[in-house]
Length: 144
Image 1 (cartoon, one colour):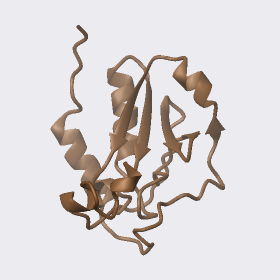
Image 2 (cartoon, rainbow, N blue to C red):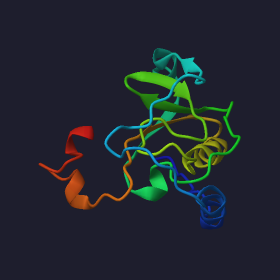
Image 3 (cartoon, one colour):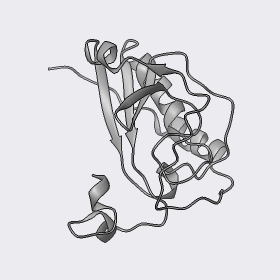
Image 4 (spheres, helix red, strand yellow):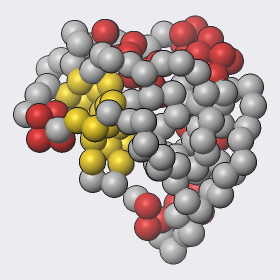
């Protein structure tokens, strides 16, 4: 059985503080999906590699409520959005806002800790939601 270490708490807190100091204004009902400057990659190639896939569901801290920053990981960090794969950038595709996200930095750290495995994120987070919004018959349940 493989043993994985978690990302150090201090790293997560420092990253969160750096990324989440403002909120942008977009509709929470429409996921962020501007792929104009995104590098699309082969999902088939990723599927044939060693990877870990993470579904990100949450509120503000997961939904691009931070300040956008210059980090487009050229390492093994990717995002799946609308059945296509992209290199991950500061603003995660699929979340409800258009600011920055902590997840690309977490992805780089995870990839390094796991021996440069591919890290794949699918982010469906929406700010200001509750558990009932994601439960059966909730307004965002269909995104699961």
